[in-house]
Length: 112
Length: 110
Image (tube, rainbow over all chains, first blue to last red; front, side, top):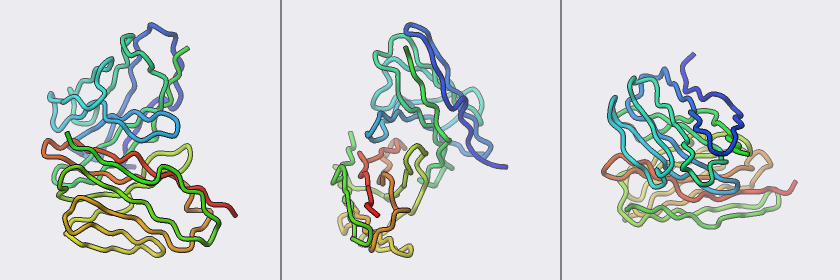
């Protein structure tokens, strides 16, 4: 069953703790993206990666980090430096040569 | 950098009325995509437009790409409650950054 999987669906963390959100795809897509969505708002790009071992900052990269050690995986770490980490995080992937993005179900992160 | 703006931010319509959302890019786009996000869900791809002036239809939905390839619109004829959600346009810049518009949230009164 092909697709893009984000886990967990809901995540709670205490303020000051780093937390890593998982994103795995078995679509053999080259590019992967992380977006943040706040209530009633649009999608803001955090980081993106076109190939393994390479990634670029998006518009709101401060307080976040990523890695792309495998084609299938693009984990996002929300660090304690992120001032307002509570949000809905969406991961997407795209086949090289096509602009169409496929999204995971998202992870709702709440920091208390 | 590239910016993609959408208007209106919200639209509340009576079931059966038409709905239109507009998307404007600060730069020329090679193509544009439209996505729909249901409440509590994730964005789902609807369609891609590539050619200048292109018009595509999906049942009650009509998508248009501007002649200058800097704007686009989505028109829904005779809205239904199943159309409820947020509609996003998206474009890709030369560095493969996929930028989404701010979205238009559609609410339909039954």
